[in-house]
Image (cartoon, rainbow, N blue to C red):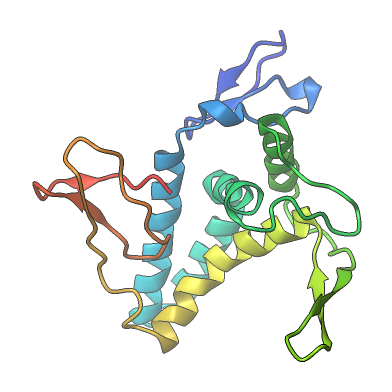
Length: 204
């Protein structure tokens, strides 16, 4: 829990959190991303396994847990604000999050809402095609993109288990000894090992 004297503390999941009355998000540059990515990956694994076992009640409970997960919120915001190619493209509200503070504030704002916010209209742009015509493209606002990523982590493992069981086979990626973990897709059964066969935490 937060203190009342303006000091910054760490939450139970290891992410630094600022003083509550300031409305600030976590210290983005101090977050242990391997830990949060691992939390999300393991929860996706559990959803995938529960689906394969036919335990629909457990699947729904795990999906609700995923939607309440702070790790899922942080990972999703990081995906849309740092990794996606359209991270600098704003929606109809003009909002982008190109600084650590903005990303942390966005994550905190999304996580504080127990239920999904009402989506804003998409920004309509037209992309020229090779034949001279134009293709319409809808660009959601940044917060809606982050919400989509959060929900995707809850729903994707279930439907991959139902329709694409071969996609989530164990993924082994060999990396140089002593080097950073390889960048691998965030899938339900992904694992990374070094050349010595030791399990390595991925740095997505």
